[in-house]
Image (cartoon, rainbow, N blue to C red; front, side, top):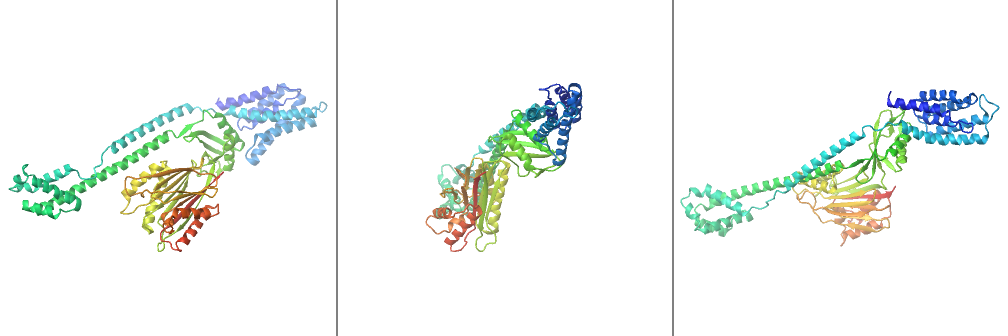
Amino acid sequence: MKKMGWKQLALGIAGGLFCRISIMGCYPLVPAFFAAVYLEEQGRWLLSVGMLAGMVAFIPITVIGKYGMALLIIAVTIRLSEWVDKRCYTVLAAIAAALGTMLLSIFGGVLDFRNQVSLLASVCEALFIFGFTILAARGVHLFLEEPETKEDSESGREGYQEQRLLNYAKSFEGLSRTFLSMNRRVELQPEDIVLMRRELTGRICSSCDTCAVCWAPSNPGMYGIFERLMGGLMQNGRADAQTRKEFEAKCPYAGYVEQEAAAVFEQARVNRAWYNRLLENREVIAQQLDAMAFIMQDCASELKLLDGEEKQKLSEIRYRAKECGIVMEEVHLYQKNDGHIQAALKVRSKWGNSIEMKDLTKVVSSALDLPVKPHKDAKLFVGKEATEVIYEEEPAFHAVHGVARLTKDGADISGDNFSCLEKEDGELVLSLSDGMGFGDRACRESELVVDLLERFIEAGFTKDTAIRMLNSAMVIHGEDEQYSTVDIASVNLYTGETSFYKIGASATFIRHKDGSVECLLSTSLPVGVSFEIEIEQARKYLADGDFLVMITDGVLEYLHTDSPEETLEEIISGIKTNHPALLAKRILDRVMVYTGGEVRDDMTVLTAAIWEN
């Protein structure tokens, strides 16, 4: 017999035995236990048979009619509720059992009209039935739940996979250190000059009759002249007049030697440049290996399974979902690295109807005693097909953003691009990029920067790692004098902690709820200029009602004041609005007053406000 089968049989037998228990001439456990078990879909006929057999065996014939009618009322009420509303709450079943039994007691049994139960006894019996039904329903639900038989094996498998990821991460870190340990030689070294002299003497001077005289150890003059010749070629691309005159006086083939020396030097310089570029590419690979190692370490320890520790909460989720007509095929609780709870569910509608996702959200939130929200890709309804839903703790804040833009006079398209990315883990990432120059070319560069940033951040890379990988990609990809600024604000919507990352970006302003304005400045170079990049970072805490204002260089450069940042602070502080988009528009309107209505560069103002939920 299947496991669920013997459990249902046990409940049927228990129901029959409960018919033996009498309290002051009443049998309140009969309707209460029947209602609690009948709420479960499986084994209703076994329960009915067991209860009827127990009533016939243990309850006086004069009382069987009363409790038989009570069981019928309970069964009809539950089935009607399931048919009409596709669900039945425990409270409704408890009310039906208590009220039905009380009314039957007050108006008399079917077969016993002489022995009427007092009104007080009927009310007490009804209260007892109501309370016992509520408590017994949860106990029956726990009893019928199937234990997680594969938990231990799954846990062991997860531990093995975690260790494999950590081993891979260590391997990538080792490769990264190997690449970074290779030294870079930027300029030609003295030993390179010696090698070039030997190449020239082997190619030209070896066939000359005076070679032995010119390059004899006792004749240091030629060595000195040749060193000055190579020095001139290194600095100016040609030898100076005095060196050339001395060389011509000592060597009849001076012009030819100088020409060949220039060719050899140019070849050596090209080889050195390619070698340095190879080393730079190795640094890029090392950075990418480090990033991959970080991702693997993060994946290996990202979630901690809480199923074994939170069995009561899992059972509560299943129980409340059952009341709403939702079948919980799978439910797991995880704790993330930041300490927040994540719930992963696989659900379907019990009766094949559509149930609003907000009903399931209420179930999970109530069971966990936490405000939760589903991932954005979750469906709006729970249907007959099983669907997976992931819930995250709802952050303490929510954010609203706005933007205002102006394109440079005479340009068809803005060279500025922006992005507002709200991740499922409660992080809001605002990014703004200003491509150097204007028009389509600048737009493509800044668009590439914003797109790559979004991809790296969504993949799970830290902001610092994402920026360095982006810079490496831009150096390899970018054309001459095509650089882009990067301005990132990362807001933790759980705590309000905000991290700022600036690479060649303009100032960022924070308008606090009290009207004061704070300014953050940057002096670093844009991305794509060099493999070596300086990332300026700052950290602030935002509170309810605070605003972020991020701008591109065009907003500040043409204010024509001694201190443009202070002027913009006054502009932001003087605008009284709590609408981010309206704030951005009014900032540009005020700036246009200072520029005389001219737009000499692309202007973008990106704003965001955070509010408590």
